[in-house]
Length: 377
Image (cartoon, rainbow, N blue to C red; front, top):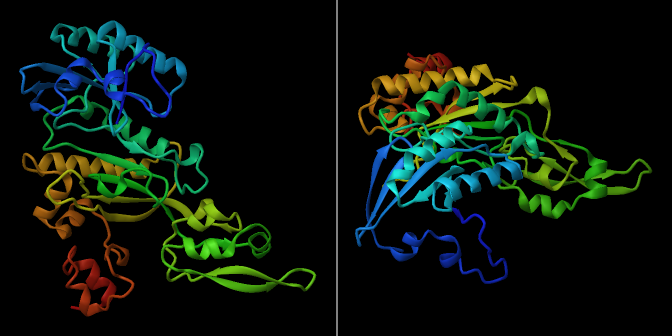
């Protein structure tokens, strides 16, 4: 969380008095003594302190990549229509903070006019968390910004609503290092590599620290490999055990000689059912192992996401997140409704499972697709 006070001198030394320099006066006065909050309307929340003081927050979506002019515009709006304070949320929205209720509607009108949609509170579609991906990351299997934009355009109207079954959170990450919150969102799109890195022995031996690469691998899939230089001298490269590789691209981050970026083998996977802020946090589960990249609009991805959302909105009970709804109807029924094939990759421990142990998996029971795979009746 970041809290910004426009046009005010800040102390950027080693010691910053953030409470006095950055917090709204009512935040400083009632720090740690807030009684409750109310959802006023889409984008507006009322915060009430034990003292009786009231603070309003007005939430708007902003681009994930901005220039200085956009930041100055946000600061000018905070000065003119708010009280000079705003904060940046964990999903990279901007919340303007003000104590005068009469300023709320003029502020919303100004934000909408300037292209900053106001909403994303209560039972609505929240801002998508995304990583930088193709913009400037070398390990991305897909483009988070492009996919997020395509999904936004498809579900834009849901950002302004407050009548969904529950809040709807999404995330997009270019690879399974998950700079986006893919593991704990209702619907997530995750970049996927379909092949292990290809090793260039000369590059590895000449430029890379083999012990560091071995130690960095989370599944111990890398081991040293002797090889000979063109002149016949001995050298040391690496080899990768494909059965252990989890396609994380960490080795590629350490060494360009372990190249994992091959366009025809890079794509996306889709996950559902995660949530973090709950009594029992739940990790998302994969429903689509791989879809090829199809920029700039990724129609196959958007179609599946749209179908999930439509089914959830139609069938979920009030308060049910996407994962709660799926658990209630059963994963088998969810796959049938989505018309998605069930594959071995959907089973948590599929690499080590036998036909007998599949039935005991916590996610799935017997399905028609498993019977097809196994030939069992």
